[in-house]
Length: 321
Image 1 (spheres, helix red, strand yellow):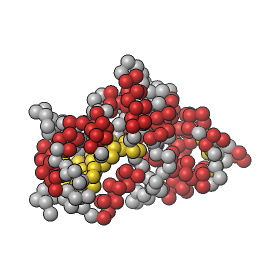
Image 2 (tube, rainbow, N blue to C red):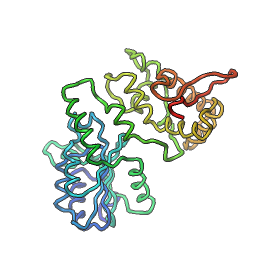
Image 3 (cartoon, rainbow, N blue to C red):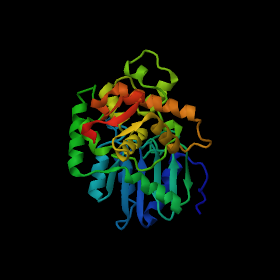
Image 4 (tube, rainbow, N blue to C red):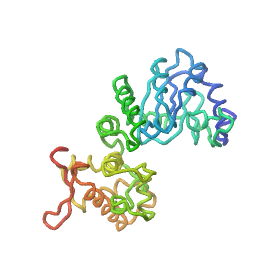
């Protein structure tokens, strides 16, 4: 056991731990960080044995790149070294797995500021957790929903990035890219209450001057922290949410349609809170989901709400069948 296991450490100490052990690491090193800068990867590469394989995962939202939080050069560094590079748009974690040594987790991104390489670096908090089968599985699962980068996809992303420099209203990848990189299906049949919509979307869609706390929660769920977005952007983020992916999976299993009562039961089963939420609360969450779908429209999300036989249902459109 490392003398640092279980202790709280800052980004600079975390970096020393990584650099001091990565050259003695058998197996596959995993670097998972929402933000990644190429300088950090180059520094790692000087210590990594040529016999050690490395896989890297970044979030790589368009705004991460245009704001400089991550850089395109990161992929080029990985490609030149033969390292695998993945992107996952819903990832916000920071995790560094060195087999036989442990897993560094915390708030430190794989950036100069996150790992204390600058004089004015961020104050981060990290710790080292032990390597065990459960933690190994957790790391592997992160990559299952990620998209592995190749040269063709990178060229597409680089072109859009270059275009966005002179197009300030382009703050998210276009749908042609989102369809390639966001999760196509739900891999787990579980939800937390924090992954459900707290509002029906009405205040957000009409760009209200004042947003209630429920609407602000939904914006955070969608990963939107600015007021520069339109229905297309909202719809693309909505389609990346876990609850939408679970809904699609349910619809396909139920022949393309599900009624309010059945969806309420399904959502109740998906939620893994302890204690379980009251059924009345679950019904409110289902109503909110209906509200979002109605307001975004079937042309944007591929499902629609109707009311045959006096009971509301959600069904797939023909294009999603």
